[in-house]
Picture: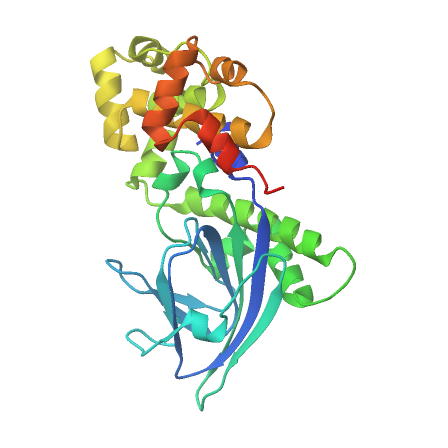
Amino acid sequence: MTDDLLSELLAPLRLEGVFHSRWTARAPWGVAGEGEDCALIHYVQAGTCTIELPGHEPVRLAAGDVAVFPHGTAHRVADAPGRATVPLESLLPVRPPGVARTVRIDGPGAETTMLCCGLHYDAAAAAPLYRALPPVLVLDRAALAGQPLLAGTLAGLAGEWDQAAPGQGLVALRAFELAFVLALRAALGSLAAGEPVLRALRHSAVGPALLAVHRRFAEPWTLERLAAEAGLSRSAFAAAFRELVGETPMRHLTARRMQEAARLLAETPLPHHAIARRVGYRSDVGFHLAFKQWYGTTPGDYRRAGEPAR
């Protein structure tokens, strides 16, 4: 996987805010969180805990381990597998970005201390391939030791997480953003070679085609042109792309174009015809129809829905 492709994977996320909390829990304990529209990080400072996701084997975290949930997937965290849990909402009923909280769960057993955060982002802005990332990525203590910048950032956050210094909200956002990107990069590098998303990113033909789609989406791509970019025949490229990415090359291209169109509609005053050209449509009507089919609404209605109330 090239650094360029990783940048293209993460750059569109536009992280908007971070809620972070420090947990001190004594066994027995267990907390169940619903899915959230944010990326999550759990960093274990001391003790141990177990993460459970439906359909997956339990993951044991020890001191110095970090778990990243790119999609905020619902999961349970407890001192041991199968432990009874309480809803996260009962301990943290509201979690607005920019706020830090302390959670303590008392009990007679061993103590676990964790730093947790939720990095909020616009889910619609997530790159198509980002959505294919596994629900959880884990770096153990040994792997973290090989990432001094990440280890130092997490250690610094653990030491200063609740300080109310001027600008602390922005500092926390940027620091957690850095930790998220570094952890994701390191975790992707340690993924099993059979993971579909990693196979796609590292594939000698599909990887360059993905990079072309994500960086040069406005070009007049056809299946033949993308296959040529990949250095494969049309049929071989289409089959490899679908197997590794989970959708056709042209649908993936449309997803990237629609993602950028939605961003431009929400963040800029550019007229629709200019946006159409910027995302690769030569016809305003073609862009209008494609956008409505993708989002279920017209570009104009999408823009108006995002306008602040006057």
